[in-house]
Every structure is written in C-alpha cells, then in structure tokens.
Length: 349
Ligand code: SAM
Ligand code: SF4
Image 1 (cartoon, helix red, strand yellow):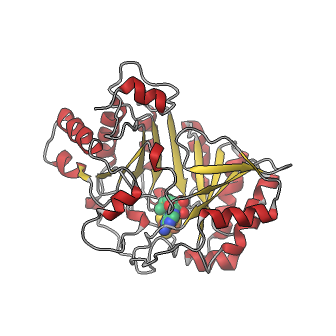
Image 2 (cartoon, helix red, strand yellow):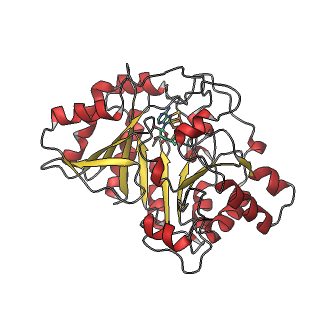
C-alpha cells in the first residue's frame, strides 16, 4: 500500500484527519470524496441521460436511508470527508432532507453538496441553508424554453430558473452544469456563460459521455472541451485561466468584468483521472471506483447478509486497492455490453 503521508502531500490534501486510516488506492491516490446516488428516478428525460420510456428500479432495490447512513458512517471513518448527493433526481426521493440532517451529525464529513435538476428544489432551499449545504450544482443546458423542452423532454425551465434565483437569494454557492450536446444546445454556450456577467456563479460545460441509457455508439466526440473552449474564447478573447482547486475536474476561467467564472469538464476526454479522489455509490448500493467501469462492490448484498462494519470496511479497502489507472483502462475492461448502455441516472454522474 502507498505511504499515506507521501500520498497526502502529493495530492495536496488540506486537512487530513490525524491518524485516520485514509483510503488510498493502488495508484497512490487519496480517496476522500463519495458521490451518493440516492435514486434512479427522475422527473426529466434529458436526451443524453435516458430514453423517454425509462424503466426505473423497484423501490425495495434501493438502499434505504438507514443503510446509506450506516455506509456513510463507515466511509467517513475511513477518511471520506466530502459527499455529493445526486441521482436520478435526488429531490424525487422522500425523506432526503432528513437524511441530510443525519449526515451532518458525522463529524468527519466536512462538506455536503447536491446536484439537482432544480425542478422540485426551490421549496427545500431554506432548509438546505439551515443544514449548511456547501454548494448546489444546478443542471441547466439552455436558457431557451423551447430548447429546454427539446433537451429534457419536459417544459420545466421556469421552475429551474426559480430555483436558480432562490439559491442566489439564500446565498448558497451555485454551479451550473451544462452538458454540451451536439444538435441540441451548442448555441447556448455563450448565453449560459453570459450568466456570469450578472451573477456570482460558476458555469461549467461538460463533455457529453456515452451514458444515455440506450447505448450511444460514438467513437468521436464532436464537441470536446477544446472546441467548447474555442467557442468561449471567440466570445471572450481576454478570458484568463484560473488556478484549479486540488482534485478539480473542471478547468476554470475568469472573464474581465464578470462576477462569476466559466469552466469546462473533460468528462469524455478524461483529463483528470490522475488526481481522481472520488468513489461512487449507485442507488442499488454498488460501489464503483470509476465512472467508466461496470465492476463494483455489492454493498447492499453485504449489508443485507449481515456483514459487520469491519467486514464492510475490509471489502471497501480491497475494492479501492484494485482500481483502474484511469477511465480509458476501466472502459477497455468493461464486461458485457459495449458500447456503454447504462443511463447516467443509475450511476449518478
Ligand atoms: N438529476 C440531477 C441533475 O441532472 O442535476 C442529478 C443527476 S445527473 C445524472 C448528474 C449530472 O450528470 C448532471 O449534471 C447531468 O447533466 C450529468 N449528466 C447526465 N448524463 C450525462 C452524460 N451523458 N454526459 C455528461 N454528463 C451527464
Ligand atoms: Fe434526470 Fe439529471 Fe438525468 Fe436529466 S441528467 S434525466 S435531470 S437524472
């Protein structure tokens, strides 16, 4: 196993827990961040994520919040300090805010963030503020109502924008996630980036990944991060690179006179695997060490078979110690169906 102190230093960990048995993978990368997908259900049908006729899993297949909390206790004792709640649409799941309050009681958890499509989110914002949610990533691919309907197959732009303004009013840090999808919203790059002129938000453009639930068969991504950056530089020639935070998946830029910043996330080109500090838990309780891998540890099985916390911890450590080097390696070793056919809603993005 890699030397902890050396890995902590190399990964620029800011506040390692003294004496914590920090999770470290077989490539010396510290693992300190988990993405919890709490449901596969969604009230939108984004074209890049799922088909119109999406079959969701039966409720009993999902981990209960009690099971999730037990896993989070174990993970936080292993040095996981940051959590992102995602889905499907997390606010489709009843009892989410009660679970967030529970998470807050875990002393090693320093940061809880949420990724949401914003349709049902607004009414929960005062409570999210009280809980102390660090930031909300709001998915918003266009500011045009017709195009929004085209991309998400639902007419919900007004509700999403209401959520956006309410987040700002409550002074909760907002990042906008826009998946750049050829033929759908490439004309929206500059209007979305222009939001940073008036609002202190970070607008990040994400390369489309092949997780649309029907098996995207694409060898070449037309709108990769370089092309997205070219479009941004054409509109804002004086745009300047910002220093990226440790473990950041986005490359960020500032624009003269704008309050916010813009960024690109090379999710398909996979430029950030070398410093990846994250693991993912699917709604069914599978632990994945890479978005592009379909191998995972079946934690639901362990929980429901009566495994002890020590046994669960041992299996998590084992899984993290046999991690693929990067997303290309993981993709090359996928078993079963190729091209990838899962929906992002079953993995959590
Ligand atoms: N429903 C919530 C939402 O849309 O924000 C959370 C779940 S969603 C799966 C998490 C993130 O994954 C969103 O920002 C979404 O835009 C992104 N996403 C979904 N499918 C994607 C794809 N095929 N390629 C890139 N990003 C994708
Ligand atoms: Fe739902 Fe989010 Fe997937 Fe869109 S990206 S269909 S909002 S889970």
